[in-house]
Length: 463
Image (cartoon, rainbow, N blue to C red; front, side, top):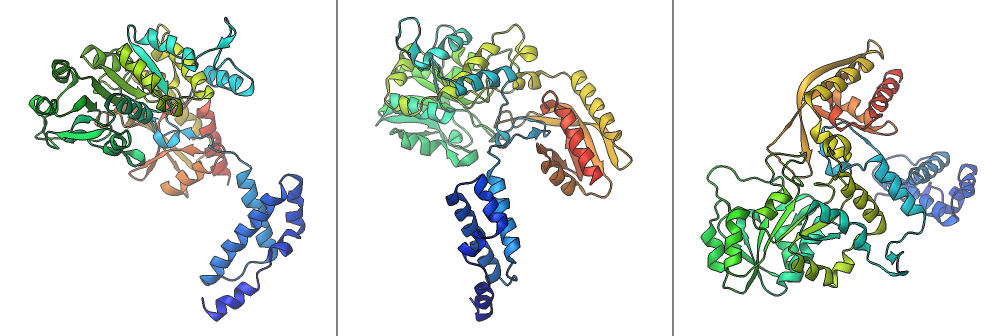
C-alpha cells in the first residue's frame, strides 16, 4: 500500500466514533449491540479496501448510512419470494416446486405448534415419523415399500451404503455424470462405501458388459438417469427392461436413480422421461426420485421398491442422519394426497397444473397479461408471441413445452436494464431475456402474480 493510500486510510473514523453517530445509535432500538458493532467493522473494512484501491475516504455520515443499510438488508430474512416468469417449471435456482397454498398453510400450522411427529395418539406411545407419508406413498405405489429422506442424493447414498457397502456397484460409463452443484455420481458412490465398477464405454454400453462383471464381488446394478446431460449420435444404453433379467439371473438388486421425470404413466410431465411406475413394472428393484421434481412438493428423496430392500435401508443408522424434518413431512404428506385426486393436472400441486396447462389456457392468460401491460401507457410495448418453456430440474432437456409468451419492452430501457428493474421490484419478478427481448411466460405465474407483474412494470414506467 502506498503512503498516499495510508494517509487516506488514516482519515477514516474508528469504530467508537462511528457508533457514536446519531444514525447508528438509533439502531440500538432494533438491533443488539454486537450486531451493530459487526456491521460497523464490516463497513469500515470495506472502506479501507476501497481507499487502498485509490478511492477517496467516505464521510462519517456516508459510513453511518452504509451501516444502517447493511442491517436493513439483514432485516429481510431469506430466501425471498420471487415471481417466476421464466417458463421453467421446476426452476432449481428459484426453489424448484412451489407448494400449493393449502400445503403451505398446513406447514405453517405444524411449524407454529407442537405436533405428533413421532407420537402415536392412539396408543400414547412413541410413533414413527414415516407414518405421516408412508400411507400416501403406498397408495401411489401399491405393493411396494416406501421411505422418505431429505433429498434424492441422500436416497441414493442410503441405498448404496445399505446394499453395497465394501462391494462393487456396476454402472455404465455413460451414466457417470455430474449435475448442478458439482454433484458427481462417482463421488457419491465412493462416499457410500461402495466400489465403482465401470462397464461399457462413454457412448455405448451393451447388456453383456453388465453380465461380464456380475461375478466380481458386485453387490448391485445401478442405472442413473443422466438428468440434463445427453450423448447423441453413435450411442447405445441398456434400459431397465434389459437390465432386470441380468440382475435377477445373478441374484442382484437393480437400483435406478431416476431423480426426475414422471410419477406414473399418465401423470403430467415430460413424455420423453420414464415414469417411476414404468421403471418398477420393467423390473427395477429399487427406484429413488425427488419429491419436488416428480411430486411437485418439498425437496425430499423417495425410495420405492421391494419391501425387504426398503426395510433394510430404513434400518440403516444412516437413515436417521438423512431423515426429513417435520416441515418437509408436512408438505410431503399434503402433496402426496394431492396426487390422489381424480385429476391432478387440474386439482393437484401447482407444478402438475403448470405442466398440464393447455394451449388455450396459456393463450388466454398471455393475452390478458399483454392487454393489462399495454394499458399502462405509450412507453410500454407488449406482444403475444409463440415460444417454448422447459420442465427444468434436469428433466427432459431435449423436450420443450410449447407456450405463448409476452414480449415486453419499455421505451428508454434496453432489455437488460428492464430485466434488472423487474428483479428490483418487491417481490422480484424474474423474466427471460432472449434475442434482445424480455419474455414473460404465463405458464409459471401463480394465481394473482399477473397483477404483480403489471404492478412492477407500472412502477418502472413511473420512475
